[in-house]
Amino acid sequence: MIDRLQDRLLAPPASRNCLDLNALEGLLAERFPGIAVHRVDRDSMSGRHAFEELLDQVRAGERCIVVGTQMLAKGHHLPGVTLAVMLDVDQALFSADFRAPERLAQAVFQVSGRAGRAERPGEFVLQTRHPEHALLRQLLTGDYLGLARLQLEERRAAGLPPARALALLRAEAHQPDPPQAFLKRAAAALSVPGVDIAGPIPAVMSRRAGYWRFQLWLQGRRPNLVAAIGDRLDDLHQLPGARRVRWHLDVDPIEL
Image (tube, rainbow, N blue to C red; front, side):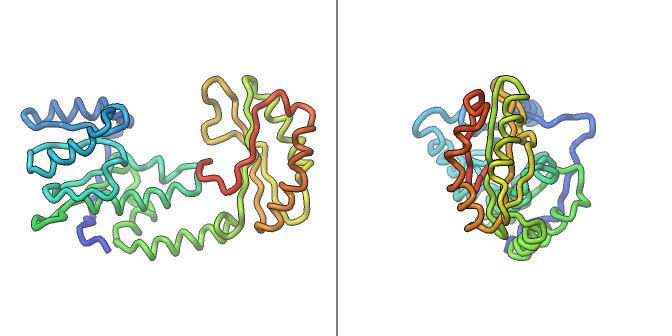
């Protein structure tokens, strides 16, 4: 599917932490003096037409380096680009979010497709500390459908979507005890045959904006899960501690 996907897994220096865009932009400007470095993210592209204007400059053939977020990856035809790089992808390899490998695969195929879209060949480089990882070795084959089938098999084995439906009951408060206590009571209230409940467990980002965040995982066949939630939603509002926390139910969550 992607004949420009090269067997290039570049390891970052062990002493260097993940670079943010500011640091990367400065490093590239220092390393390549005289070549314009354009940064693309929501902060730098503040004007209504700023992104399109930058893309027009790149399409015009100006020698430049474009560094940014996934805004760059999707649907942009830049025939002059011959090198595309993804930096420090290891977070996706070991994420608590089961969808992270899927998102990484999508990003790799999107970003690699930006290079070599015209007559000049393109090259794609992926930076990792784990070049032996099975997901990366599979990505190097360029077989996206084969990778998707493997991911689907893993989801089925683990009982994760789309094999079974998933809902998250999320709760947060300024102290860690109230959300955990509320979720323990909620787990008892939602316990019915055909629905598996795990938790309370910390959210992937366990603390944000001064709030401690916890969640229940509810998994089962969709009819069982929907019935359990629908029949007992009013009961959750009446649980002791329900008013001491901020809580909500997220059915088919996109983010964990």
